[in-house]
Length: 245
Picture 1 (cartoon, rainbow, N blue to C red):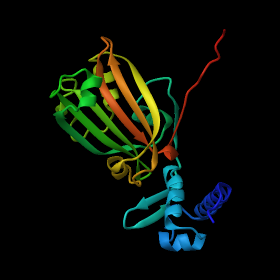
Picture 2: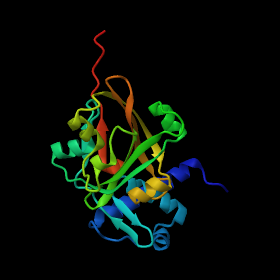
Picture 3: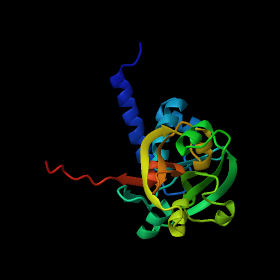
Picture 4: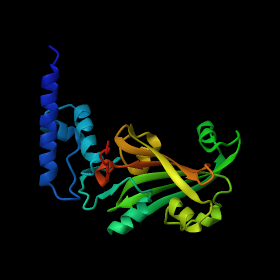
């Protein structure tokens, strides 16, 4: 006989409660039993266990290392900020006294794809500068940032191999082109293979994605960004005022 939905929900709730208790009782750095062992202990299939563990991983309580094991972690610092003002993650972290650091900076000049041509108002075959970097916190990757700029906005030499800031801050400091505003779309997505490798999570895990277009004063898009965040390390909010009418 097939299980009812209420039974499935009860099983899921029990599993999450038992995993939460196990994680709470462990110390940061402790390794959990292997998936087969843990699944037998909890009386569930490995597939069911894996799905439950994904929730705790994206919340920042577990870190799975391929071929090594699953470890308990607890983020001692969470970057919490409003979204009313356009600021880089680096600037927000510095203002709040949080320790973050870049890793794996990658610069590449390449032809723009069709989506980038449309967003940046470029002709097919035009060159863009792609800048990707991973943000680290407490020894683990927590954000993966991608900037796509039309060729000529920034030269690779202005970034350099030792670059440890943000493209937004660099453009603001330089003053050219003069910036006006940014349009940002926020969504929860499933991590693909590129993002999962960058953030050391499992493919298909839920993450936050910010897709932004940075406009200059003349209305041109000078930077197209895709930012991917582990939810457990970031809390974003918006202050909303009542309509006086």
